[in-house]
Image (cartoon, rainbow over all chains, first blue to last red; front, side, top):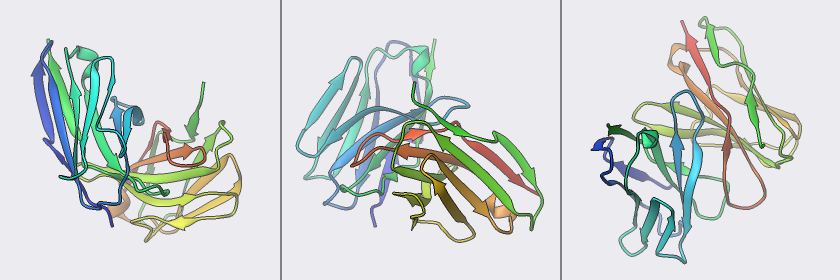
Length: 111
Length: 112
């Protein structure tokens, strides 16, 4: 089955700096790559996703890049703010019901 | 506003007890999921259902069963709870095809 590895497990950044989280996946047939944000005491929420026919996607301060050849994708958060502090999960899927998640990255934005 | 509601936020049970975790969604979604979340392991799929009375095993179904009698409701059952089932349980729903999962706020289960 699909194996998704996520790094780093924790990330501390100064407010205003950028944060980058990287994930690799094992199944070359995977074609859907979402990112979820989980705030304390809440369930994960989709923040951005990318499909394999696209190399990059942006939504305001958030961007995701995908390198299908290398089988890795990354989340970039620019101009970080305190409300960006959360746990972030990457995931991968190949057009079926099953979404395989990474282990998560705890991001702390220091004021 | 779309909503997935899990009936219990916190539960404490004893080893061997039968445990029911209930989940209700108001989006008329066909697909519903139960995940388990543990530190360092991310979210792991226990079971999912793509229609009423239909179910499929996920990655870690051992020790769990599910029930989906109505489209909006998906229940996770621990027939005989064990301490290694202490965890956060997350229910999610999704419309047709591949797309966004909508999660509930989670049920934290402690088995003593």
